[in-house]
Image 1 (tube, rainbow, N blue to C red):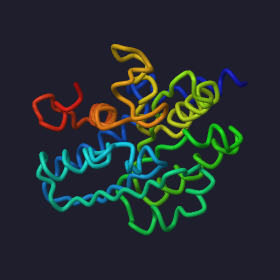
Image 2: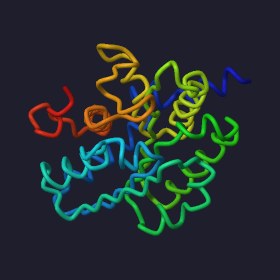
Image 3: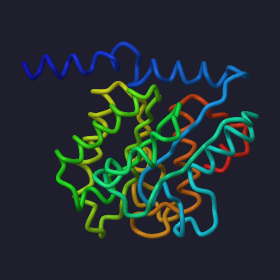
Image 4: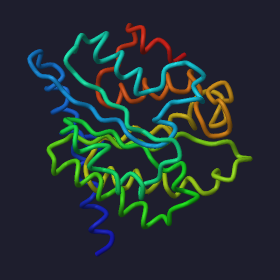
Length: 235
């Protein structure tokens, strides 16, 4: 029975090549519609918040705004970053109406796990994330999940984080939503998971790290263009 359930959960991926393929198609159709205007809510913890550790450089939500509202000329789109440093799934879920739903978003981007791995039991985190995904979808929003970046081996999160990354990947499959797998991207890049030129400290990406996070997000949702100035920042 468990194997059958796992196979059923994998059907969207097997049919469409990636989770959230239908959502991606729907989002691209909205983006390509010159008459549409979208509200994007980007939320999460300090990595999404983007303060301090970027040292004045743009964070990945800011790169998204530049790509969409600047380079793609979608001037009427609204991109709102409600990420809060130190956030966990419990805190965001409790404040979800204020931080997400009151904006009546067309797109909800969720990036959590870095703090949760040290403060929230795994099953509780997964349950709370699932509830946030469901609430967003019930509101009519397209959901984009993020598997957060890697950490340095000397940091205490290094051994705690991987199960939370797997939980996010499972949630993306179970709910058939798009997944931006920063953890995989950071791990596979040229110098490995601990490319210190991408980090401000052991867990927070710096400006260059955020440029790569943005580029990965663009690839997943289908708006990456290597000729664009924003995409060229990921070198």
